[in-house]
Length: 342
Image 1 (cartoon, rainbow, N blue to C red):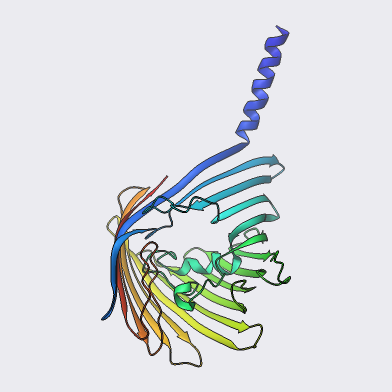
Image 2 (cartoon, one colour; image 1 turned 30 degrees about the horizontal axis):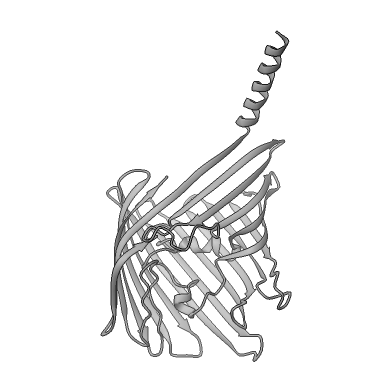
């Protein structure tokens, strides 16, 4: 009798513990066919990945510690639907451990930086595929600008105060070159209430592969009218050579509209990229439609046209189908694909 009571007590305790914690496996597989062409030049056709949403595999979990305090982890890696991750799976998309409560949330690890995570949402193409805004892309600057994710970060997210939120993060460089190499610091302040969303973000980091300090600020907003959603973003990005003190600055902006059509969404977006103190500039027009077959599965099509002026050689993004643009030459791209979430 005593053993039975002990066994029941153990089962009850373990059941309560299990009820207070959870682990979720999640992911997206997005694969399509794409075509990209330089005017009067090369062209490519082939399989692409992440045309509508980044293909990924992840694990996340949360434990209720009581008193409104929760501990959580998040491990997420990118998948390549076209080659099955020939380079292997890692957790470079996000690898964080966190504590959250009435005070907000503190995270430790690698994730999207505060200068990007909110303002990038005003890109109607979600920073994926050929239609995406290129303000954070090496397709514009010719190198990884380090403004999307950072390692070794401490991040604080505030609670929501009537629609107002903010975040700040600091990424330790942990480099043998200098204390500042690879270091990142950034933050944002945002207001989201009903149909209106506005975000201001600033950040700075030193790029290990370059001698440049990168400083950036972005201001974005959107308004949802129900049958039409309008979105806008303005961005300034400055690079300063830490050896010669030479600098360059880019001014980029976008305007976009989206609307529900049938069981999906149609979207159109115009973007401009300009190197100041230069005649080099580029203009991009992107059109797309996402057809929702269910809550988890959708098919999509995207077309994007890039007009390079003078010495500009900006190229379209497209995971799995890269093609460098020629100076002053236009580039166009098309892709269709299917996305499934689980």
